[in-house]
Image (cartoon, rainbow, N blue to C red):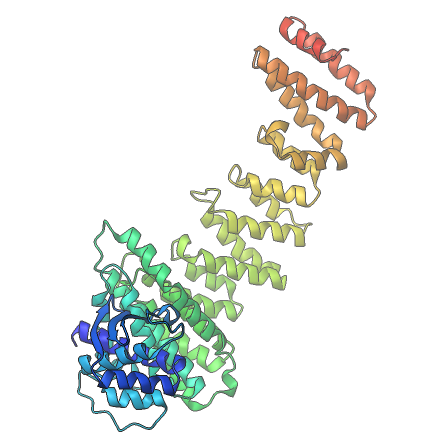
Length: 526
């Protein structure tokens, strides 16, 4: 089908859905009167999701109908609501496109029964029934070239999606949700096709643009998928539609040519509600294993090449076979599977299933510690901190955080401070060579109030380093630190130890005249 013709068809179907919600029958009737009297002077499709027109009334009015967000539709007439000029432009567009007869469009908007529309093979406006067996093929047949309109933006696909969802507007609500989910997946596939033709120099920017545009679609899919959980209460038709949508998601998730979206996540969000169905789980495992065995060797960096392993790992995880799930995920690079590993580890942590949690965390540590950096380690360190708090008797979690220094420094320091473990916090600062001036002032005050003795080694080390600078600025800084250290000794009522410390400094550095002068200025005397 010609892509321009196809896009017009979807736009009109989407507009009819919106107009039916926003225009009263009286306004529709006045718009019809304007259309039949040839008052629509101009219409044009813009960017695949916007229809503009000019209507002659008491003045010439400009109309803009926006499918991507109908609330932004405007008319320059005095009416501040959706108006008759919008309806007139829509009827004129139906007439011009030849895909929807204006007369039947008017009757539908008026809520009247319509005569059966005559469809040609290339001009069917929708599907005649809730038939799950043909819908995917019909979507492809009628709208499979809509992606050709997406040279720089996915806006043309907004009208495609709205039109596809409009097909099911009179269907049973439960089945309607499945049709909507399938429409979203179909539209996302159109976006993948459009992205495949983007030149390498523009891919990064187009990827950001395309994914941002598709975010609301994906969010709606996940919201609808979350509602499909009570499978024991389903009728036979719901099972059929669930299988149809799942088949589409599974096929796309395994397609190595898809680059834009996490199809594996879309598949998992849909099927999570059926994991407690033993029969379905067994059948799905067989399908996935067959798909995995039949997959041709491909670039391991492509997402689709790891889908079967990811999906099978989800089944293993549900059945409590964590070691098998980890073995499957070990075939994939860490980046695409990290959100799943984190989610599964969090699940076992919440259950306090320490044996299984250890399996996931060991895998996580071994994979993420290679080429580690502070940002990449955040999820793993978050889990370590939660585990250490829940199981303080197990030193493994803190040992792992320590093993990942210096990248884990901020997380580990925050963890010790939050736990009130000031000695460990101070030992970390000593290990990292941190000066009190480099530490968060709030943390230093808290440690000084709750455990002043823990700060003593940090100040001692910092004073030595400042003196070793062997310049006047370093000596001034050392004396400044000495004044703070003196307060700590006095707070601990260790006046004699403070005196011995000052005497040792005086004896050790008695030849440094500049230091002696600065200590005298600061009234630091043995």
